[in-house]
Image 1 (cartoon, rainbow, N blue to C red):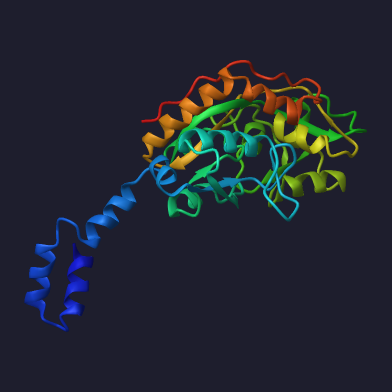
Image 2 (spheres, helix red, strand yellow; image 1 turned 180 degrees about the horizontal axis):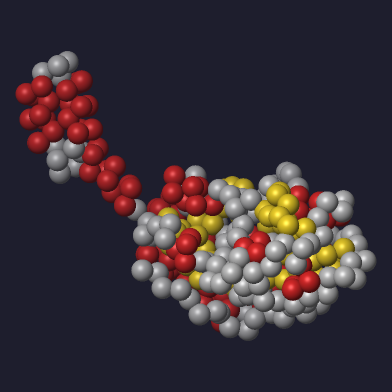
Amino acid sequence: MRVGRFGAALAAAGALTLGLAACGGGSGGGGDTGAKTDRATSVVDKVKNTKRIVVGTKWDQPGLGLNTGGGEPQGFDVDVAKYVVKEISGDPNVQIEWKESASSNREPFLANGTVDIIFATYSITEERKAKVTFGGPYIVAHQDTMVRGDAAEIAKATDLAGKRICQAAGSNSYKRITDPPPDGKLDLDAKLVGASNYSECVSKLSGNNLDAVTTDDLILAGFAAQGGNYKILGDPFTDEKYGVGLKKGDTKTCEAVNKAITKMYSDGTAKQIFDKWFGKAKGLTAPTAAPQFETCA
């Protein structure tokens, strides 16, 4: 209402009384009401009306979300995003703008409207649920560990005590190693080596600047498939529920997303996408049914 009054006052060149009267007379269809409606519009309503959506994904994770320049990103998360967006929009030709969303900026991007929705190896945690509404999960990964191929002294996750592990900005994976329950799993005295993302983690592993990269098995499988002298231990110790990130409170879109994910599994598309990106990875099996969803409330 204050915005409408200010605009009316300017139009009346300082005639405050007339400005206030104009505001009252236009309350049924003025710009102020429209602004409130826009702010309240869910992503599913927005995309149905505009046929456009901004999707956040990783751009540095092979097999999940990778963009090497020139065109859209490629990977499992990207293909899942395309399917879900087309389902919730009801338009196979919906226009998707892809936005790189690193682990460190996912919550701010949703809160400030930089992106409408995020598919970016976004593990659902209680801490994140306080800031984000999550659809899904659309798949459950498991934290594992990748080391250099000649690292005989590290055969299981508990061997990481005293070793140098990567601490990727914005990721909680390292906490599963170093912290006690409930936040952590192993409570080991490992040495943290900082990195801006998991691409840098793998580069540091290759350069012998750290001893292990520990995070979701799907992330590790994507990097291992790129080549290099690496091995994945095959010693998973967590469940990582990959959720679809939405602005806090957007339950309408959350429910539409869950409906789309259910269809993606029932029509066989989920298995096709999984096999496309991870079918050659040892120890990974395509899920046959949608995971149990989180509540949208």
